[in-house]
Length: 400
Ligand code: ADP
Ligand code: MG
Image 1 (cartoon, protein in one colour):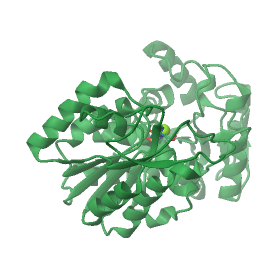
Image 2: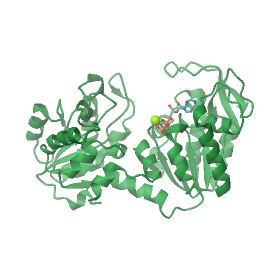
Image 3: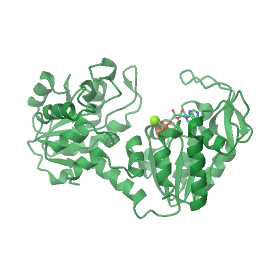
């Protein structure tokens, strides 16, 4: 894979496919981690005299302009972080984009409007995607792929555009791929994996693959209840994907056969109702043994004994990959499990990688210094698919 050091960028129009898909609440950015992660590559290109055209998607608009998904607030924040003005184009391949790019001097930066305001970006039809990629290619001389969070998508700006322009990987993608290689090739052992989050179905592929790689798999979050059920326990009103119980039972069996240690919660923090994440009103949490969750209560975090158990299981690991919060960390009554795992990663001398949008946000929202972690991936789905051993379209497109 070429990097930006292999490109002659001075005076050239360089299209940077970044991932600026940040969470917004009423037009305000609630976590700017992805914008900050995009800055070094943009800065480097501008510093080398490129005319930098940054593009990204945000949210899931339906292939047409939709003001609630505008990148305008992102342009403002990017400008603050770069310490220079960022020209904002009100469309992606229309008059505004062409005029904005034509107005760039060497070393200046522009941001295009949300790529997904155009149906060609995400189309399953190769010709429709290709037509949009042709129009994007008309704006630029060179392509830099740096949107790691989108490389698992076969989208026009990720997959089709680099085939149309001389291309290279940006610094963020180069770093992410380097880290993921350390989790797949010559891993230092013991290799522990912590998986949580809401749905077990999102993570089946990665569990399947990690059963061949990891020494120890710790399960938390909403997905833990499907595992507890597969072990014959009742889970009350907890999140349960009943249709996945057979698959999960098969994983537990395979883990035993392969000598992979599977660790499930021994206690949980439960409540009658799902907590109100807006008001954060007290939720009357109770601690229950994992084998005694009655109907009428739902598990919303791992319990104190499980926190200790998981910290101990991480303490002597040499490599740790963590994806998915241990509980509904957005509410203070159910944040301690996620906090404990984050702290265990910080306390451990292991090479630690945090992957997953919500997990990375949790680390920041709970007040941890993210620089203290080995690596926090900007791409949840992308890092999981990489660890599943899949070919990622946006990385394959940068290979040749
Ligand atoms: P990531 O984005 O890091 O991959 P996910 O999107 O899979 O993580 O899951 C994050 C969500 O899982 C959080 O919003 C959290 O509130 C939710 N969650 C965690 N534990 C539970 C639980 N026990 N019951 C319901 N939801 C949960
Ligand atoms: Mg998520």
